[in-house]
Amino acid sequence: MRTRFSAAAGAVALLLFFSGCGDKVSEVSGTVTFDGKAVANGDIIFESPDGSVTPAAGKIANGQYSLAVAPGPKKVRITAPKPPTKPDPVMGMNPIESLIPKEYNVETKLTADLKPGKREGLNFDLKAKP
Image (cartoon, rainbow, N blue to C red):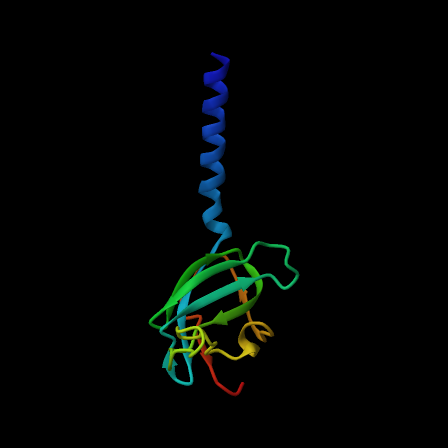
């Protein structure tokens, strides 16, 4: 009897916890362009400036992204590979090069202040020369 009560209480606690989480998440979506063209494929990462919250990452496909992120101030990192040009003569495959300059990823200057709830239209128009 006691085991059933503990299991039921645990299930109710989990349900209450997860039902309250919706207010504590920012659902962000938008577009990512590079020199005026949609980024075909890549990754977008939102991370707290002090590293106190686990970063949230999502895929960019045809210039579009959508993901859930913990609210608060964020550094935004965007990466995308360049389309392959020609195979490496030594390795026999196309080398992967970055399309996006380091000012938007490794040394990002992009930021966003996210509030709980839905935020559409958080767009990033990146330039080759920031």
